[in-house]
Length: 282
Ligand code: NAP
Image 1: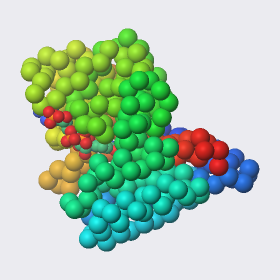
Image 2: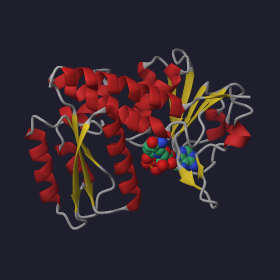
Image 3: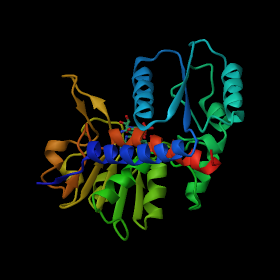
């Protein structure tokens, strides 16, 4: 039976650490604050934004909420971002994606000050990660590294295979695993003989966006399997990109869905907000 990597427990530990550090800053008269912008009322986005605000409240980070109408123009949103960039009392800026089609997501992300880019999506932060410099790292892959480290999974020297090359998950995941001295292969929809590649993995990260795609035949005996996917099946139950029942008996360790990677994303957002406040010395 595989060891279950417990994202719920590890994310709770991280939030406690952030809470303590935020309280210490507060005792010195320094506040930590995150501006959260949502445009329109996409129900999934509202749930994500709600969860982020709840986490802020729990750890003692002040969240400033901006709920803009669906018809907001790009210029209006860019103006708000600029105002928040210039406010000394705002440490982090988060624009919930997706944005309505009249607004360029890329333009908005690149308008956020790299020092307040707690999602780690700005090209400057992506560049810092790729050259091994300090900066903000995309929360989901950063959370996966924490899951591995806090579960005592050695990364150095291991064959790591990442399935998916998105800017938010796959690419930063690969960069982080390289930084941890893994030997990294990135797969995508044009990869030939996917199974042959994934079966080499000591650590397999599935970020494909296809429910239960990874079955036992993609996995080497004893591999550590990290499932990034989140889907709802026909019975409205959550499942991942990995077929858990098929893969679990073969893996040495595996993340469940829910309760694996999912809770780590918000915990790492809290870590990034704290880091932003510490960097600016507020
Ligand atoms: P994405 O942008 O849709 O990227 C999917 C990647 O998978 C692409 O690079 C694609 O290749 C590759 N792919 C698709 N079909 C494939 C196939 N048959 N064989 C090999 N590679 C294939 O998705 P994402 O944003 O990275 O997210 C991935 C999953 O993680 C989704 O289920 C998403 O909901 C979930 N997610 C979870 C969290 C969390 O907090 N837990 C956070 C973010 C995302 P191409 O580049 O060639 O198209």
